[in-house]
Length: 296
Image 1 (cartoon, helix red, strand yellow):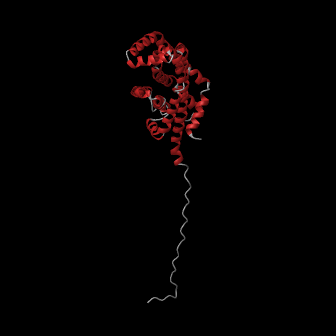
Image 2: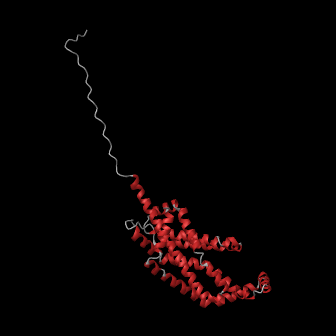
Image 3: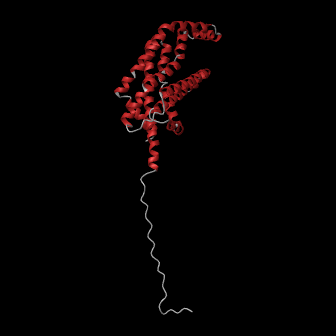
């Protein structure tokens, strides 16, 4: 079976493990508490400020008049909250990813290692501070890419393509490093990143598109803003599940690739084959001169 598909199904089965389910509650509780707290203290002020900004734009006035003519007066009232809700999606996604990487990823790697790769040596090629620097640098690059790509979101197909691609790249950068930080040496990690770059990136992109599933909830929230206190925690829970699955997928694939890499030298220098000894040379006899021989 293809290693990516094999790791996919193993990760799906591990999501049902009681330890995985229990570990998902801590980052979920933190994210829900932070989101609801920010919404409680800053939501109304942010909506009023955004609505004031929108009224100063001529095209928004034209859009409002068009909605009134179409009999959609209620849409104008929820336009500012809906835009603010959609604008918060990238921040919630990135925060959910980092929370899973911080609270769940080390435990996910340890779980996979204990159950499947118990004999794999831990060479400690990464560290907490190295992982933190790597994650922060990758996050800043992803946030910059998101900001630069915002104008392209107005083109209907690109809004469904660009954000998941950026989230997938960030998932690949953060989780691939953490999956190998404890077991691989620095040289092994760099080699695996080079030889399995496209496979790891593919896992990240698929995970990024899976993370776009809560967009259905956000679309409902745009029409039913009053349900946001329920929809936001539900969407965060789905994000947590997706990134927990992604962490297990990366752990299974990366550790299997590391085990295969370490098995290569042993396979190439297998047991020595017995060398056949050369046959002994037969003694060569030189005829001697007889007694009757006469020499002149």
